[in-house]
Length: 294
Length: 133
Image (cartoon, rainbow over all chains, first blue to last red; front, side):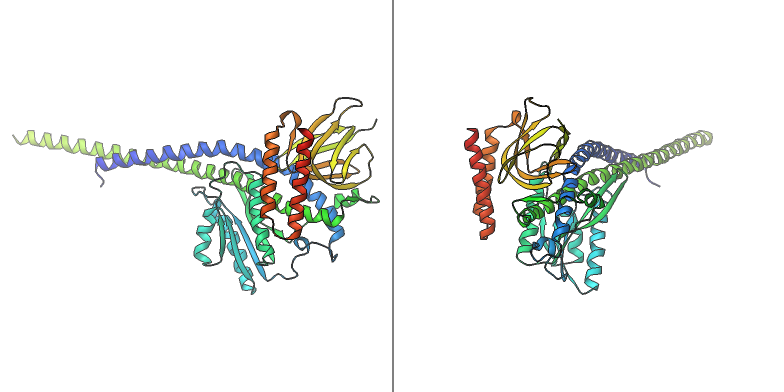
């Protein structure tokens, strides 16, 4: 049986923990709102870009003039997995669920006899993957120093991917991030970024029936400019979705932690009071039986 | 006069989405005006000013864009800008910063094609810098 002092100490420590988790929850809630807004603001550009690109790419697919970013290298032997996670932990299953998806994907590729390497954005994903795939981590980009996620952040990351591509280090790049659905639900997602995976919209085809586009400058020039930009945009979208997901996951994780701490305090206080009462009763009995003996 | 749907988006937000009459776009091969029922066109932009006329003969709304794309389709005009600010919030310091970035890009560029591209971008920015000062 724990002594009264032990119980008092434990209650105090759980209370202190609860204060921290509660504060983290509130901070995450405030950050979430901002991250959600940023993610929503970036959506229109990505959508328009996709529409323009699918118009353009439909005509270029299979053409020998198609840039390598669209056509690929003609092989799918070497894969680059761009794993985007957070730099901080304590966000529930946020980091590990993204890492798990990437790991499963990598295992599948390895089983098929392909080669994989990782480019980690955010330290947490790198920490998890380092143990399972030693020597396969190409680089880790930390976003710690970045105050506000913007287009230039995404461009820097895209730049790294292009450098690797230009050095002919991989054939296919896939990016892993967490799509923000709601505070309680974030969906780990895989998206192929190189070669560009362009959805063929039905709407655009209808729209363009009988209309012939003019290009200024040439079609190839525009496409060559547009494709790298598209990759950067997709990365930006992933970063912003991820930021919102991270805060959402942290918020619900910290909410749970705060509730659990509350329950623990209740249980410990009950124990504490019982022990205290038992001690008083024991002392009374000792006094009474002492008096009777006289 | 007929109007058409005009959208101006930068990677970080949607700046304009409304019905307008006339837009002047700084295309890479020269400025061009877009009215309703314009033929489908896809053009890259150079740094410059987009002028938006909501009504006939009215004062245009002026925005500075740092390059990007314009997509004219039967539904309207969409400009995908790298960065866009209303002229009222525009300052020369940010333009100088952009020129400096472009200079860095040029010195970092490898390969003839990338160099050419960076040089072009820098020239366009310098040209625009001269035009505003």
